[in-house]
Length: 208
Image (cartoon, rainbow, N blue to C red):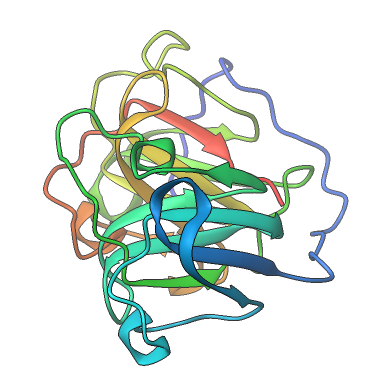
């Protein structure tokens, strides 16, 4: 059982079942602005080199939500990719402090459900300390009443979220999914291979 001392700043959302995207489709390009060699994908790719690409420099997401990675085998910086066009690296990086133009692997986020997303964040590691339920988008956790710039642990009950290092959905991204780690992220080092700090200052739901 999680110990909860819930705040009233964020209200729970009615549970309506998790939606599943019927289809995933993404086209990647070797050059910026959708130029050069391209290929369409409907499933994960653990190393873009295996498909004859040097790198990916622009992306067009036609269906579903995806997560891209700086390195092969789903390692390094994470980038959430929702439906739309990404003509160059800073269109998806969301990061003003760490320049990343490398994009080597990606996979669909099957559990993303914008209408039914819920998670609990905890002040301390191992689901201890003050906690609060989240079921919406929060451009600034501190402005909404969270106790500080850091989050100790998280439990994703349904759907998927992207957490950002800074307010306004900026900085390093961490993709949190109910289908990975059983939704349990009991230490900031579980957030991804690029995790260097427990600092989380904005969170939003991932959309298909």
